[in-house]
Image (tube, rainbow, N blue to C red; front, side, top):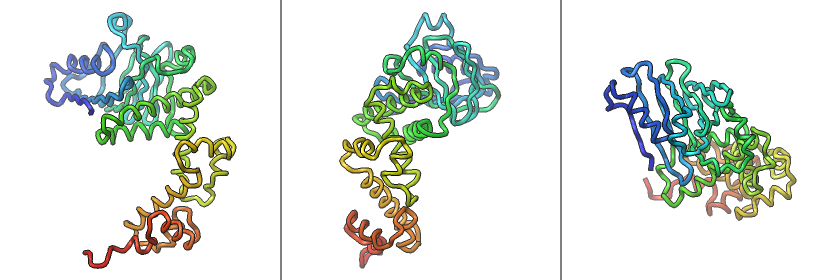
Length: 319
């Protein structure tokens, strides 16, 4: 599913031309300058989800320019959202200059000139989303004003989005072709939500997209706090500034209530720990929000048809 390219087998004298071709094919035509072709190494891979693409670039020191002449010659009319995972990147577009490091992201646009490069000799790694301009349903002036701007993905929806991109990088090869449209929809929803939140354009986001983004934020919040006894639907609603009724309404399409989702995820963690940790059953339940051993045992039996103790023990006669 990933299309991969690497400079490992490219002669040093050909690496500038080779990488210029790689960038042209994976992003858009650029002018590339490599200070030390003999020491330059790069790799790239691309995954097509549909209209949206994800690419992963690892490269040593270089500079690239998207010039007016190249734009006139070839323009995919695409927004690029680059997440820095290693090293630093300097980006300049529409009079905005940013230097981004791990955990930062930058929005830029193939239809406007820009410069991107490494501010030092270190190796950089960037995951880039390629999204057709027409698919981001936010005001054009807000998006243009954000070009070249550094975004953080260390908290809130940004952190949710970063974890999602990391999961795509790690697990996309496990997905069947029929699953790619769902990945594309989720990618667009999360990116639109992140941009709307960062640009103060949340009211402009379509209602369904707002709901999906909020649901994913709630999912991430629940997963982070499963071990906390205070994790209840009321507290989840309060932390996300919605009513309990609105929270339950969000979950209606999933076929389980908020409370059921919390209980199921806690029991899944307990089941994992029962097979890998030599702790008393009651302690394992308490680790994941079941302070009462009896109620934990009853909930576990209802979910899995066996008590926690019998689930942990192998059947009689097995090795």
